[in-house]
Length: 204
Image 1 (cartoon, helix red, strand yellow):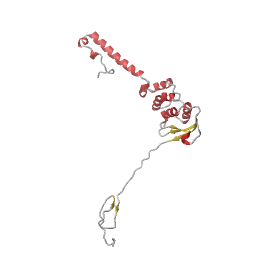
Image 2 (spheres, one colour):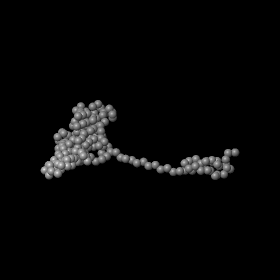
Image 3 (tube, helix red, strand yellow):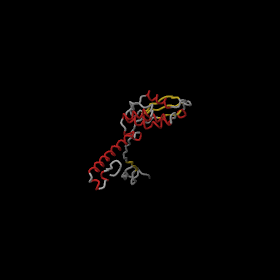
Image 4 (spheres, helix red, strand yellow):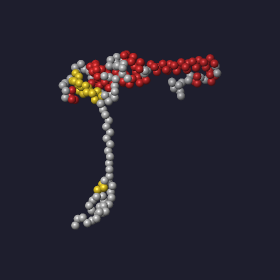
């Protein structure tokens, strides 16, 4: 390959320069240094590489980005999601979107119902938290985070804890023979057949 990650400076030297020991040595040193520089460059890509960062770096990054709702006790996946969504939460702070985004980073399919959606009083809302999958956030932390990013003029009516369950419904079918009372008629049902009954009791 001939890209920035696998480039070999030695291979690009003219044949005559390859035969000069001092030039060949210099080319090898330059190639090795270029590879090291590329590795260092990758370590400098932080925000775009959140999914590949170590947990210690994530903790530092959360502090630098002022992710106040970040908890060092979160699992690795929750930490990454929280940091990824932190810029959006800060941008829309004080809105329904910011509170939902902060909650969903840790609590999955959680959300908010506005007062007019459930017949409550104006400027109030309620939160539903999904507990289908265990999450590291506890209820007290959820309430703290809600208060941190809601509008100051909004009030929490309550928190609804919910869990989802998958239900599998299976069906079974059988075949039945239905006999018509007249000889020669095709049987009704899923498996047609011929009625061989006597014609004695048929219409006169």
